Length: 227
Image 1 (tube, rainbow, N blue to C red):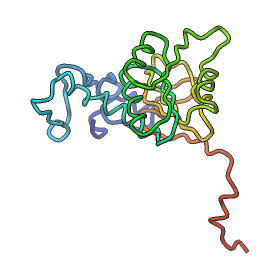
Image 2 (image 1 turned 45 degrees about the horizontal axis):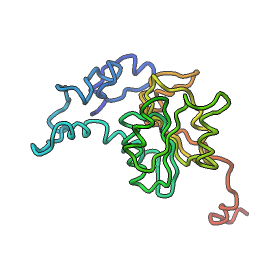
Image 3 (image 1 turned 60 degrees about the vertical axis):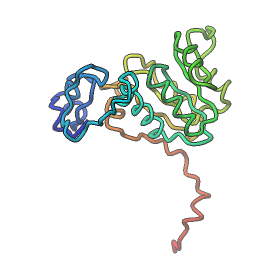
């Protein structure tokens, strides 16, 4: 919401080595501010951070401006979704639903949503063209990676994890990606997972990039006299 001065959490600095600005709805770990969906929200500094909503916009629509609309769009843009891509989105809550819509707006060919309950059918009814995988309905020998590759031979170009930290199952979504694909984390991860500081990766916006083997042929365009 603002600079690091809005977050006085000592554990945050101890865990990540630096302070992150206050965030709505992330507990006292990031300032202790109520979520953007609350009826009354403390906003520092409110004199230059608020967006005035016209009276013509109903509250049930304006509420999307506080979190869902922006967070979902941010996840799609930061994961570098581009025209012609295929995407897999983990979780089918509000952020994931909007992210699915944004990926189509940006020109994706196919989007797959992955969850385990009624949200699968609901998402398909709301997002035209969206295909879903209910991993609880897969046979004992079936896996989500195999199902993704069945729908998208070679894997998805982009995978977005919007499950929320408490629902995350692991890093299997990286196995479903096409070569040089991207994984975007927008779920609320905090701290370490299997000795890896995934919370720092997500909250601080760090890019962890597997560069792949160097395409030496492309170096021809950058050649110079090495003698």
